[in-house]
Length: 380
Ligand code: SAM
Ligand code: SF4
Image 1 (tube, rainbow, N blue to C red):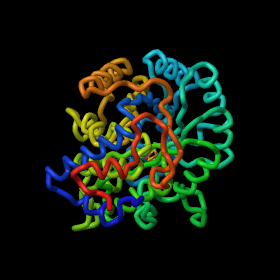
Image 2 (tube, rainbow, N blue to C red; image 1 turned 180 degrees about the vertical axis):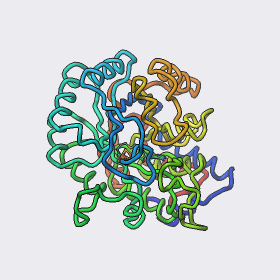
Image 3 (tube, helix red, strand yellow; image 1 turned 90 degrees about the horizontal axis):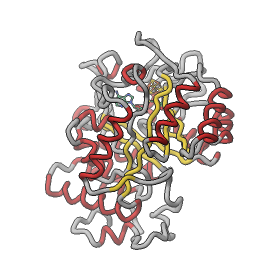
C-alpha cells in the first residue's frame, strides 16, 4: 500500500479548483467515517494557567506581555472536571502556558484527584516539561499529552520558538523528541501546527503532514495562524515565505485537515476553536465535514476564560460552559452526526499504512480501498 507522496500533498495544498476540493473533502470524510465513525467526541478544555516562561513569537500569552495572569486552584480545576462529567463529556484537557509555578507534585495531586473522582480520560497540554515530570504525571493517571510541534522545519522553528530564557542554547527545545518520549511512557500523543504561520511554505506544511503520519499521532490539532498584534509575528512587516507563503485561511486549514485524515486515518482530529474564530458561522461544521471528529468545548470559568487570549477575537470566550455544550451539541446534531460516548481514545495503534489489519470494526476498509472507490485519485 502506498501513502500520498510529498508532491501529491503539495499539489492538494495548492489546489484552488472548488470542484476538485469538494472531492478531496468528500474523500477525507469517507476515510473518517470508515476509520473513526460518525461519533464526535467532546473534550472539555480547562485552561488552568496563562503564566508562561516562553516567548513564542506568535502567542498572546508569551512571557513579557503585560496581561493579567492567573493560575487556577486545585479546587477550581476539580470543579470544572466535575462539570465535564455533568455535561456528559468523556474526557477533559488541562491546558496552560509553560508555567513552572505549576509544580510537578501539585499537578500530580490534581491528576490523581480527577482520576479518583471522575471517569474522565485526561489529557495534559502544559508545554515542554522535564521527563521526570512527564513520567510522574503519567503514573498519576494522565492518559494523553498534546504538544504541537508547530513546524517540522528546524530553521522556522528556531525563528519562532526561541529557547527559554536562562536555558543553554546547547539544549534547544525539541518538541518532536518530547512526543517520542511520551509515547514510550505510554501516553497517547497529540500534536499539530498552525496553517499560515509567517515563513511557512507549502513545502514545509506538506512535510508537517508527513511527520504527523511518521509519528503515528493519536491526535492532530490544526488551526489557522491568527495574528496577535502584540507579538513579533503579528506585526504587519513580519517576514514571510514570499510567493511560497501558505495563507492563513479557512480553506487552507480545511485542506490540511483533509490531507491529515488521509495520512492519519485513525487519528482524532478536532475542529479547533481557531477555525471557529476565522469562520464564526460554520467553521466548526466545515472542520467536521473535512475529516474532523472532535470538538473541544471550553470549560474554563469566567473571568479566566477572557484572560486566555492566545489570539484576538477568540471564539466562545463570552459564553459559559453550559452554553458551549448546547451550542456544540446542536451543531453535531444538525450535521446528522452523534456525540461520542466514553473517553473516545485512539481505536487502534496499528497504522493503516503498515499493511496490517487496522481495525476489526464492522465494515472497516483500508484507506486504499476507500480511495479506489472514489472518483478522485489522490493516492497512487
Ligand atoms: N503552552 C502549551 C504549548 O505551547 O504547547 C499549550 C498552550 S498553547 C496556547 C496551545 C497552542 O496555541 C499552541 O501550540 C499554538 O499552536 C496555538 N497558538 C498560539 N498562538 C496562536 C496564534 N496566534 N494563532 C493560532 N494559534 C495559536
Ligand atoms: Fe507559552 Fe504555549 Fe503560548 Fe508558547 S504557545 S508562549 S509555550 S502558552
